[in-house]
Length: 268
Image (cartoon, rainbow, N blue to C red):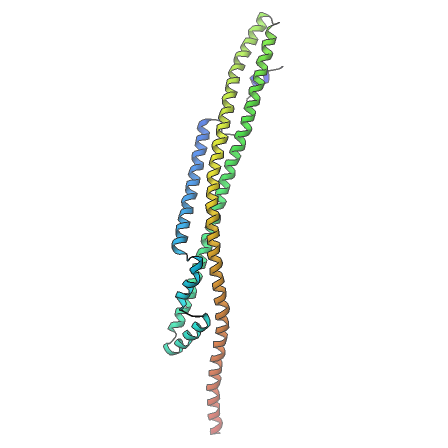
């Protein structure tokens, strides 16, 4: 067996985190990243629960802005008030619609922010997953090198039996170095195994964060769907009612014009 490659070649490590200090630094960085994401998710959840209407009460918020009753009846009541009071109630209606749209748009902005946080969390989890894979591969490499070193030491013991004194001295020197390598590779295998376990545990923190993202996204999607449904109904109903109002205005204008025309005809 030729053990010279074991003596002369550095181990073919796959990863770049090969010391305890390097592993600790990367874990600290990962924890800090997840902490920042957790704070952002907490702030987003607080803002959405404090400001956004709950799905069951979104229609109530619209009703509070527009007044009680069906949309059509409310529109007609406000239209009559506009004729009598100069349009103040119509302005109130328009402000209510605008506020409802702002609330729906705010929820959409929160959904976009949540998607960005999710992407960042997944990116960090993927980076940590690669750290786990590298540590696992290097653990296997260290274990394999350790076994090869032990085989080389056994081969040296056999070679000593028929070696000359000079050759025996060289074998003893090689054996001493290989014994140190055997201990080093055993220590490397333990260190890489611990690193893989620690990185894997930190990936679990990201999994928990994604669980929170999923719950928050489901709540925001429900609120947004409720809000858009209400606004769609308003757009449809108010568009139809606006057309009816324009037709009524046109009828009154034509009626006034016809009265004038009849007066003119009478004079003629």
